[in-house]
Length: 356
Image 1 (tube, rainbow, N blue to C red):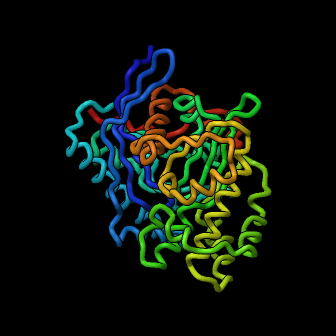
Image 2: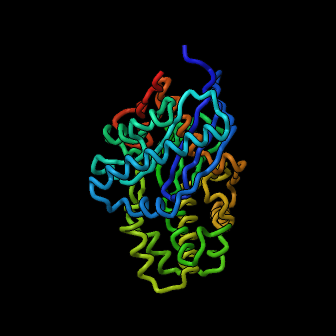
Image 3: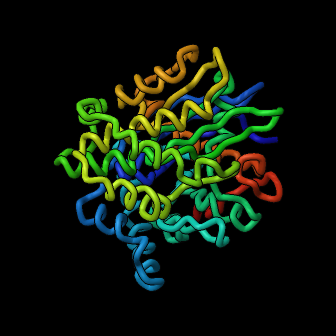
């Protein structure tokens, strides 16, 4: 018999490079799953680490190996400090996503650094990690992995939308959970906010001050990715190869680029979350971009847009990777083939059991 209660730490680092999200969560399973987030925080990256992670896509194999070791040590120190700071003693597992450097499922390859076995010894806890690799080996996209959590923890919503480095959505269609990446979000918005000297576009005010460039908007909306069927996922490779060259080819004000890209995001999301009178649940840093939410509501006039409490907005991905880890410990399905395109549903992740 499996136990009913699990205390875990969920750890996530996303493509928007906001930092490492950590959440200490209690999950309870009786008739259905419930959760409570007790402690949570985001640990920002140093300037040195930001530069390393931004440029790692160009690293050689040996440089990546070295980076993986040093990042695993960094992650272990961040997790250990979180445990110590909050005096956490009841921990069933630390469930860590690591940080995605390369994501090429079409080539049968994905790399999340920070998942080396030494993390267990450094943290001295059971670690569940490396959630994407097995799915890619089974012919899947290795992403998105959040939908099983959406289905079991947030079932009252028609659509679960995350606005992070990329937007991704999950929903039920023909009794199957469907999920995929929709478009870049903060990977692009933060880049142009940085050009104006800001870490991000606070509440979308920079974009709001700009004007839509209709030609650029049309060309963005015409990119092949948006016509491709799901399952599909996005990485920085797409942004660097498709989005930035197109955006850079327009000699327009940076605020106009931001304004145009916000419109692009809203249009692409509205095309997907199009069911009338539905409930749309939004999490991720983009939920604070009031202007983006305003544009989304403009395209979805009959939709109830639900933005939850701060902890759920900020730490939903850490929460769900904690949940994926719990399902892995129970050897239950935590990745859905209907979502990733893998050959079968499976229980993904690697468990490094704590040394007694």
